[in-house]
Image 1 (cartoon, rainbow, N blue to C red):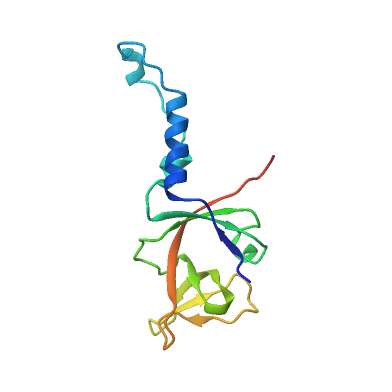
Image 2 (cartoon, rainbow, N blue to C red; image 1 turned 90 degrees about the vertical axis):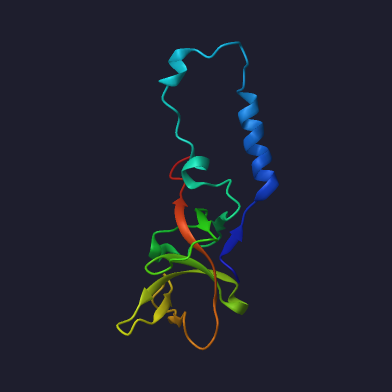
Length: 147
């Protein structure tokens, strides 16, 4: 069973973002010069580049990633266009196990291995005989720490 759920994307996300911007839009004539110096608020959408077509939000459904410091309910911001995977958390398609998060590590011979968060799960060779699809690289982990 997969421990991840791919969240809403594309037009729905863009539509929501544009609606939020339009709600606060007021056209009142000339812009105040003070607006040039106004500090902008922190936007997680802009920080994580969430509206980009290659960035996907993924929700963690269970506690299998605690070894990586990722908990049930956390959101992973995954870059599907990233090329560099060494020493990164990646989302991989492991066939019947579905999409899983693994850490890419290199051995002393330059081979790449996928390590699970739990030590009892055996490592899988990424560049071995069996092709494994890297679905994306985890760029951010978003956690809710209080309600």
